[in-house]
Length: 286
Image (tube, rainbow, N blue to C red; front, side, top):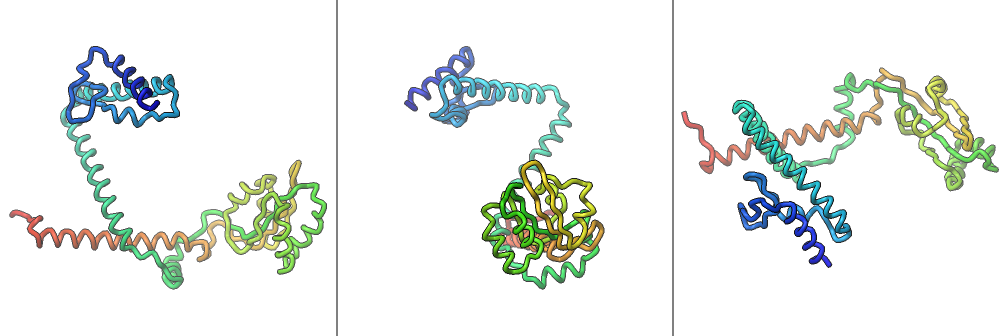
C-alpha cells in the first residue's frame, strides 16, 4: 500500500514538473523540483505525508508545499539580482553571525550543563537576598489564603463553613477527607500567591472585592448561580512592600545558577583558547 501511495504522490509531482529540467542533480538524492540552481528532493517531500493521509489530501499538501517553496526560491533569486551588493553583504554577515551564535551557544550549553552544579543551599539564597533586598520590591499584591469551591446545594455546607473558618488540625484533616465533593480547593494558606491568580480561580471575585481580599484574617463567602466559594485570607503583602524571601527564592536561585553558568562559560573560553595556542591552532601575527 505504501509503495502504491508513494507512486501516486511522485506521479503527481512529475505532472507538475513537466517541461522542467527535472533530472539535474547536485548530489545522489533524487530531485523532485528545481528552481534555477536550487533543488527540492523527494525525501524532503516524502516527510510531509504519511500512510494515514488520503491521496487527495496528500496531493494538496504536496502541491501547496512545492508552490510555497518555489515562490520563496524565486523571490530570493530576484532579491539577489536586484538588492544592492552592500545590503546583501550586510545580510550575509547577519546570517553568518547567527549561525556562529547557534553553534557556539549549543556547544557551551552542552558542556556547561554537564559541569554545572545546580545545588544551592539555603545560606546562599539568604545571603544574596540580604545583600540585594532593594531589588526585591513587590510590583503587585500578594496574599496567603485558602479556598473551597463547592455546589450551592451541598447538604453539609454549614458544617464545611465552620471547619473552614476554625481550621484547627482536626478540621483540616476532615476537610481533606471531604475533598471529593469540592469542585476546586486549596487548603495551603502558607504560600504567597499573586492576587491575579486568585481572581482567575475564584469567578465571582471582582475588583470591587479588593479591599476584602487585601484584609488579613478575613473570611469571605461568594456565590454565582451554581457554586459557593469560601475564602479565608490569612496574610497580605501590598505592592511596593519588601518581597518575602520565600517568594523571591525562585528568582534568586535562577540568578545564582546563571552566575555559575556564566563563570563556567568564561572558564571554558579561557581553556579552549589556551589549548589552541599550546597546540599551535591559534596564533596572532604582528
